Length: 317
Image (cartoon, rainbow, N blue to C red; front, side):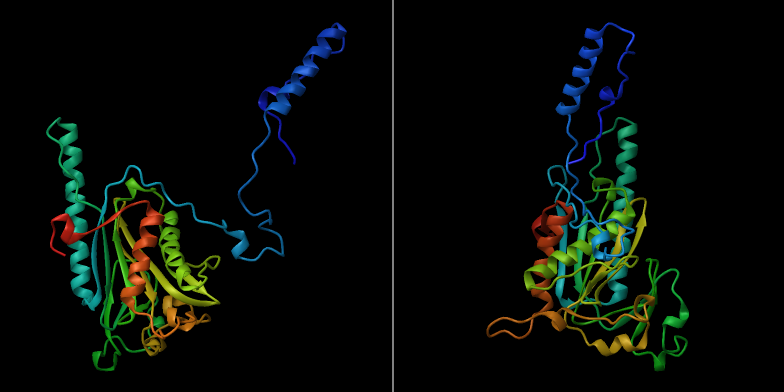
């Protein structure tokens, strides 16, 4: 295995004009230091990014490094995955909770700077739910990705919302599990790209116990199975506090996707968990609630937290 020299071993030996025993002494010292400091083995794939044989998956880190859980408060869970929550109601709830969190964080900073009693910051939260049929657009969405006239509600297959999240047109509806994490990334990692990959990893780990291998596509967000996009990601971050999140197609009506260019990607199909789940003995359908249970475990593992039901935390669920 190749080694790189420690800085101390890169010093030049004394010139040969010095006495021979000094020259030999420095040479042996350099050799001993070199052997004492081997370079560690890399944990990444040996395939070069520029190598033609390296697939898009091999150019990504082979595993996602989860965060340790030793210093984070529990995340309050609002699990409404067994019912439909209107998009407007869920949107309003997110805004209310995020604004309360930002206000509590400001109060915490003020109280700390003025040496007053500490003010408890509002907790991080996770919302799990399903929506009635709904189309949403991100801040920079391209209007042509809607394949219906948004100005004529009578022709719209479902309600349409223009939101503040990133990303293009997407659809929410029954049979799709939506996760809205409301997190202060200062407690995790202040890196938006890392956060997007973390949401993808939650879905990948949710699919694994079902025997479904989810993955990433280079240059694209979301989670993919055999070339089909099964989960879309779109977020909004304000002062490092997150809202919106990830939507996983469990067993929705796929016809709704025919009325948009999903996520602005016209040449890739959309898929669902049911398209790839092999089933179990005596069981042919998997429910959103069952997938929600797997997602909760995956969320805890990826973000290094413990989820506490809202009703158990003294709040109304």
